[in-house]
Length: 244
Image (tube, rainbow, N blue to C red):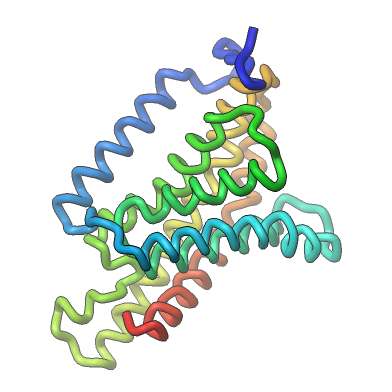
């Protein structure tokens, strides 16, 4: 017996125990709220913040399912290259850099999932996909925002330090590259680990192949790290262009 296409399988061989997944989500959420409040990254959204988040979520859907899908037809089918996913990564990083408040990542992925279900997937399996997208990809971004006190990719840090323009630019670039690489690395984890080893078997009762998971994890990392670095550099430039 299932609900909305969710089989609810929790005893599939190789599946990550549901208790560990729940503890991770609860622990990560508590951490990001506590640390965001402590460092100043947890602040109220303004109207323009919500506009950015809405545009980012919508354009992520357009890119991944239409533009990225079209461009992907001209490239070899391989786990090492994912034009649609990389486009979403860049868009979300840019939105997070413009908003720089805890919740920006999760809400952007929430909008993305809602619109993706509405125009592409359908709502079968929900609310699990809302949880999956928001509390993995989105939450990783928000953890970085919390840890940096709202100075994602070093944006605005030069103002708090009173540094000169040349020093500030150099500092922002270095911080952006480091944080972008870390976030790119974390974005390589959810699909092979969280989805293949828990959400997919939980939803559909599918088997878990850890050899396949580890291969995909290793295949995703190089490209996602590089795109994370490029996305951070682009995000900093766009944030500066709009006067941040």
